[in-house]
Length: 634
Figure 1 (tube, rainbow, N blue to C red):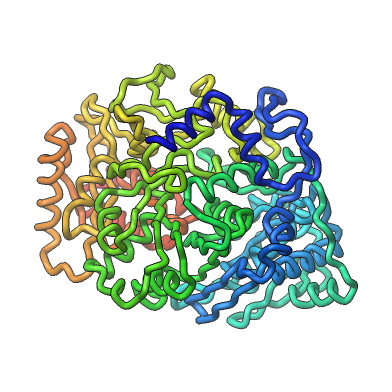
Figure 2: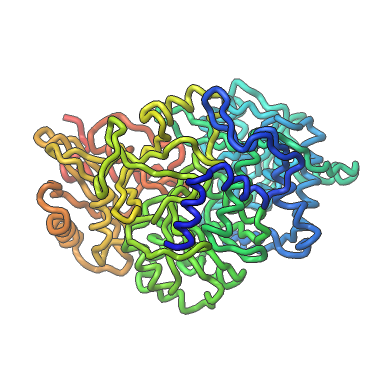
């Protein structure tokens, strides 16, 4: 751990000096008064400084790399591929900023962006940043009620949307969802701008709805292409909503200055990227990965970023990812483990890899769900490159724990996202916030203050920020994840804290059981939940999705799964039930809905989460549980 240890220790000795040095990679219109300050007990980075995020992402690169591709749009849904140079993207962003300006959008105003994976979504985000406006991207296709909740909380002056989004085999009309959301919301935006896609045209409401192309044409005709507006480093760049435990979404705020400094640092040091390299985050602009590593991070660093519209399988097959890498010379791919589990399920022997030249690919990064060892090892064998699990959250905006390949490639320990990054002093504690010894599972917390790039607060809700993240473990940020640190300082994130189950007084991690089950050669992916038990308090149940091509009775695989847990973890786990199911319920970003599954198993009232990919899967889970005597109230 030579370069990593030296870098981490340098941060620990002088955090403010470390981030001030990193900040030299960013253009500032005014320098800061203080690197780190506190206001009402909340941390603020680079107070007094002024900057513009759009300038740092686009304009400053035009002179040196204006003809380099900034953004490559690759739609497996339509077959369209289009590349935009830094010069072209800057022109489009400036023009759309002019269109927003025509509708009265200015510094400090909020704009909701409700878009599919099309270049116009990126243009809208950067145009808001150009004007000093605050964007709030809502995942395209979110239900009207959920969108209305976000409209009422964000109070946007204007909403940018599209006529439709595309999923394999279907067109999802966005405009009716948007219309209904505006009907439901108490706050009414003054206007919407709608990008009309060829696959479905939307009817526009006169006086409220405006056509994207028409508005761009008007801005060009009027010569509207506003320059970048300087904003305070501590001013919000965006608000991104994450689900709250109370059902009320939490608006994670990201500031301008600290966000740029942190993301720019990670592009080289964590991801090993150089200006001009091609980076692909196979996510969605509606999620934090899309914000940080489709739109902002790669552009700050002068890279080419890929905007992909499609799925890892079915568009048209499980070789889609390999095709994109080969076509565009991708150096690093960042996606969720669930994407690779889907590919592995369809192509267990990775036969399709042979059809493509993947020589440009140097590293695969995984995050979003725990990277189980079986999936990581499969990807290593298939691709022949380092496969790096790393761990972070919507709230943090960039990796908390990673293997920093730009500094040095550390030894990979399967099941661990590796070691803390500068900015994060990770501790594992008990319920009283007492530090636990190595290899002991507890709550994962981060010593305050949080680094630049992390959320400084929640949108219009400082008190909610304190109560959600700071109150339970004084002096620490609560991650709500559980796990342990080993003797070498590697972190193992085993589950959310509410996924630690108590079996007859023994605290057991469902993530540890999933790791064992994923090692079964016939299992593509799995989930373990704890269900209520009158005798033991809770007992685990495992759900198994089987690889394509496996032709064995499900009952045999279920018995083998139970035997595996007994062998690897022991009788203490009381693991007696494994159920083969066709698929697992997930959010659109790939997270398995274990909490909802647990409610179904315990016969509690449950609702289909707004983020679910396919609500019908929950009924399938209920049917499967009913077959083994769970999920039905007496």
